[in-house]
Image 1 (cartoon, helix red, strand yellow):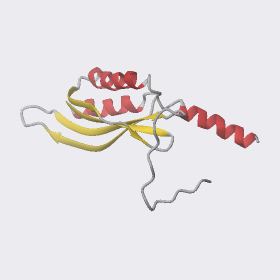
Image 2: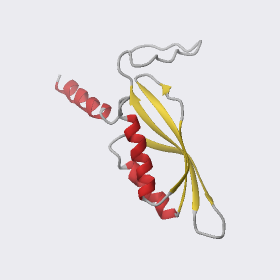
Image 3: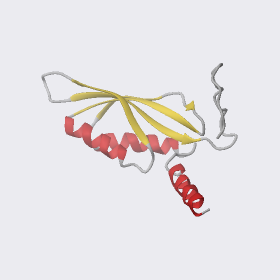
Image 4: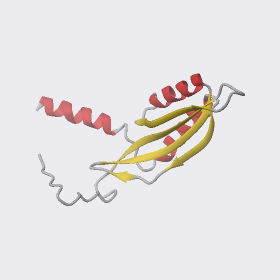
Length: 134
């Protein structure tokens, strides 16, 4: 019983790291502010369609920023330090040209939202994909 209580407490604290519907816009502002605060120039910031999973939804955001190597690194570090879960993937860094030392980073940022009971339709399993509870 004690172990179960510990697991429920841990699960509850992890769920608090997933923003609910009303917190997602604030999180998007926090990500943008993290980049602007480091002097980055956003050339693309496009939230994409939310993708429902089992008990959460994944919200991909296409991001393209321009800045120095250190500004890009500090931006990623600042986003990682946010109290909400945000991951970066599909990262590509290219040089902008020989005129300056700026780099362009294209990435897919992903944040996650907890789906409350009745909050959104669950995805249907693919045909032939049997799912067992347990």
